[in-house]
Length: 505
Image: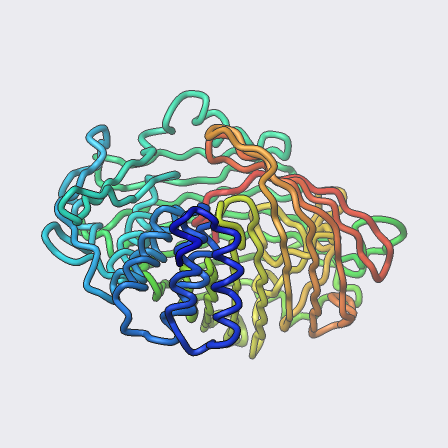
């Protein structure tokens, strides 16, 4: 400590570290090591030692307050709140909202679970973030604490708001016309009547897979913890079932699909950890120009009406803001009945786990994620309810990035089935960002297996894809370019897409 007071911080660090090794149960050593690291502005190291001190004495108010301050100065506000909550801090004196926002003040105010002249709890902060995101009108926002001389804080909210067709002409053109290279546009109209009511749509005129999808959504009665949505989806598609999107691959089955669907759903953002969704879908489909081959069976080609209840729940099982790590689990169930002759019943069960880690103190430099998903369909679903692997813009999110799900514009060149396992690993690094334009790059690894009712739809083999993915973001619209290599067949796949509306089914 004397060396530290003399400004000889490296020598002080070595002396304190030697003492910590001899007395690992004495909390004073990690606290003083944190002080030395703090003076050297090595905030991650300071936070490490303070967490060590709190492990030795969870009731140490000095270490808790110090850790909150270090995390606050590092820009990791959730971790700061987590630490300060141990000692009844931080106290919120007032709420400073962006004066330029057009959304109704009462609706926005209800999104903030905490109130002035109270303690801001971690659960309130995460619930507020969930509700602000759920409004669907803030593509970018900042919720920060501004320190006051008396030790309390003002909560400061600043945001870029999405109104009408976009936040500006250029932003509206980029988000709407980004899909033109593949004959798709995404018209949107946001914050209707200043009530966070949004209209989203997809219009695709590709002759092999036409699609029109429209959705209207809003918080009911000005309550941001809920969001209802009504959508309609029309598809007119040609399918050719093949084993590969390239090379010699004979057609194993073919069909033409016409499908119309209407969905009503309700989503809850009651807490920051738990989100659930209830929905009901009425659809009608017709299969024509069928060439069964070895892939298609009569039970898969049941035309007629269908009712379905696609419900899901997501829960953040682990949330460690100090380590910038989260683990979110999810489950979904869709019970359906097709009114054909005879009728068919089926149930689609899926589960997922997503681990997300931001390892650097600058949380946008590295972004590491590992997602595992699995699903199985029981009963007899119609063909278009089966799972689809591979790259397929807007129509499937089960990405195997060395497998393209279309060939000559027609769907069916990637594995299709009624049971799957899929693992997606990404390590993404931001290379450049100036607030309006950003570019990042990183390696990928996809592992999957698809089981199917017929061998023509999938071979049931394990598939391994590796490669690299680049993301170019302009005004919050992302262009994604990927290269994947199938380690089993040696095929290479180059693919590009624009991030679609987030509520697409």
